[in-house]
Each structure stands twice: as structure tokens, then as C-alpha cells.
Image (cartoon, rainbow, N blue to C red; front, side, top):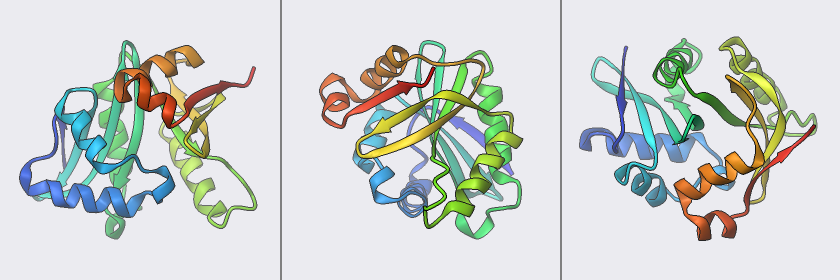
Length: 184
């Protein structure tokens, strides 16, 4: 497998696979509109690390950066090959590429009443195994509240707000109600 760091949208041959994986890997309430995802790549307000095996697109990490923050907004691996170490390899590429930055991600809360509770536990353990620790905050994006994990230090509500304004713009970030809630 080779992982290629890109700061623009995937190659034309990969675009359909990227969109299909994005739409299938994340529930509707957790997805930003796809046109927004692409437009932020085109304008340099986001970056993407893509993974290929034998020339086939198999996964990606979509990153939103601001100053020394790198937000792992989305991480996905083709569902037919999950559990074979590809996610770890993509995360290693993320950690290498953003090694001088504080990397963080929003993860589903460990809600025991959730239908996919066991899957949530597995994701939490996956990120822990890959060096992420729980941070004392939560992220609210639209109607969903996430727990936060990171590497390299904590993040503040103001830093998160500035990052999201840089990515989405002031109007959209307020309209969607994106904020970090510190739990100190």
C-alpha cells in the first residue's frame, strides 16, 4: 500500500470512489455536504491523505488545519478491507505529516444505549492503540455531540472556533452551530 499526501481533491479516477466511501462510511447527520468537502480541498482550506493499494483507492484522511492544529475531520477505509491495518497505516501517515502539530479528532460518544455501542468501543480502542488520548472537551457539530481525542496537547474552544471559521467561514460555522465545549 502507498499513501499519498494531497492538498487538493483526489485524482479524477479516484473522485467517484472517494465520494462513495465518504457517503457510505459516515451517517448523514455526521457528513458535511460533499460539495463543501470538495470546495475546501480546492481552495486549500483542507487537505486529504489518500491511500492506494495496487493503484486502487482504498481510503482517506480528510484534514482541516489552522496554525498548529490538525483536525482529523474524517478517516475512512473501504468497508471490504477494514480490520487489516490500513486505518493504522493512514493514521501513521497523518502523524508523520502533521508531526509538529496538535492532532485531534471528534469521536462518537461511548453511549451504552447506542445501537452501535460495541463499534464505538472498538473505534475508541483503535485510536488509543494509535497514540490518541481522550481530551477534556467535547465537540458539537450541528445536532451531534462528540468526544475528543488527540495527540500533542489540549485545544481550547477559541482555537476550535478559529479553525472552523477558517474552514467553513464565519456565517456557516455559526449557522451549523459548531463549537468545542471544555470539560475542566
